[in-house]
Each structure stands twice: as structure tokens, then as C-alpha cells.
Length: 118
Image: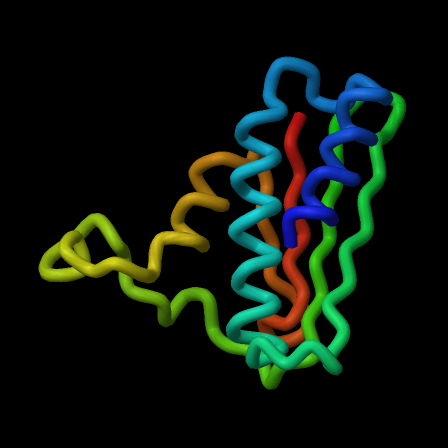
């Protein structure tokens, strides 16, 4: 995960994508990749997780992460900031992504996430 994040962040900085918001992008990307590797690819190194990045003329960035998993319903994930979930050591990735990015969409039954930062 780390080499991919470093490569993407180098591109973000070189192209001045979402300037000043690099930390948010880095955390969201790390969480999305971790979810894809652990849950979508079952931490199996033979399975492929894809990451595409684009920066448009407005300097906003689009990051797409795809995994080979069965998918999931993002709406069914409980809030990590309510009830007993506050004490859980896991389950904050999607929440963080939604808080840090300006637009987040799950496609293909949850096996693909599109994240945009303006």
C-alpha cells in the first residue's frame, strides 16, 4: 500500500492537484487501498487491486480504487461515532474517507470507490 500511496502523492504534488489538501487525500487513499486489499482481495497477494488517478483542469483530483471482491453495501456499515462502535478498533475507514473527500461514490456493488477532492 505504501509504495502506491507515495507514487500517487508524488503525482498530486507535482501536478498541484487539490493543493493544500494533500494530507486528506493521503489518508483517504490509504484507507481505500487498505479496505480493498484486506476486504476486497482477502489480503491475497495473487489478487489485483487497481488504483487510477486523474487531475483535471480545475486541479481537482479523482482517485478510483477497484478490488476483485464480492462487494458490499456501504449504507449497511454502522457509524463508528455512535453507540458501542465508538470503542471498536476497526470500522472507521469509510467514515474517514467520507469526511476527508468532497465526493465519494461506491460503484459495481461496492468493489469500486470514486473519490474526488476539489
